[in-house]
Image (cartoon, rainbow, N blue to C red; front, side):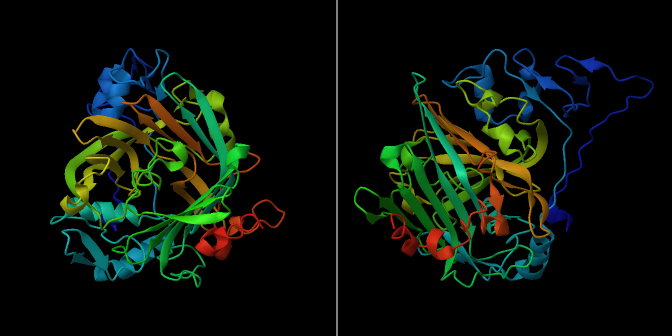
Length: 442
């Protein structure tokens, strides 16, 4: 169990024999070497003292060596490290089913798995293929069986600071390998689908009802299917599964970037190298649609969160290098992505993406927050807050905010009557299947 939960207890108060705690520059008690004391405020004057806890992309933004750099008044407040557990059902499924998971070697040099039912596939990911096993754990980490919002906000800024934004509906639905209270392992309407991503624009008016649907299959070796509903044509177009580098609705996110964490590419087309253990600063705020949807709570035009969004924690993480298998690497947009994967949550809290020449291209931080789930599901860290991706070469950035106080992020059964007026985002046929795309303009 200790290996699964991944606790690495961190001292948050320190006693120096015979000495009183004194205040450090930036506002916190002096901590032992290799720590940051709770209450510390990282600023432009002291950030180098803490750079060992920063991913490469974050360090570059502090140093000002990239296009999107932190402003002179930048502050990151550090709080005590919190510890989180996966939901009890997910833990039980891990204990019950993980021993039967087997690795399958594919003819093209990739890997897949068989025997997976639910929970964490590899609770003790060791060599061989340790990095890839961690990627698989990331792919199947706990997510609620539904996350929905009609307050989805998508903003874009170019190098001249021109600003535009879209608004819409987002429904992310798990149909197989479910680990939620009172739910079956597989939804009766799954039809072989593991996960469905539904994104629909409601504004601007000229793009209204444009909808993207991606279906990932329970057989991880089967390529995902991707569809685009174009309202001007009143028809659905099937998008090539090779178009994973295409921008999502014209943003800086590609289709391989948009799931929980910064990776959405599946496990059969990618390999991953274990780079080592690293403790990094990560933002895991308490659930608050009001805080994250208030644009005054971000440094502008950077759209990086101010302390009003939440404090940063030191998180024990695994560092993995994710890349296409050689047979599928030619022409792919990224040579690699370095994920910083939380040891308790099995999600990436920061990602640095590199171009074909191995130069830093983009950095992204992850939309996870500590939310309360319905139906006795308890409070768990799940996706649904805010995420930004910074294109440091083109000078673009995109931010996605998942909800607001009027149209909040909801989970699981709370998606069944989302607005109190009968909107049912748990309707699989309408929001998680190709059939539903034909109903959009009815």
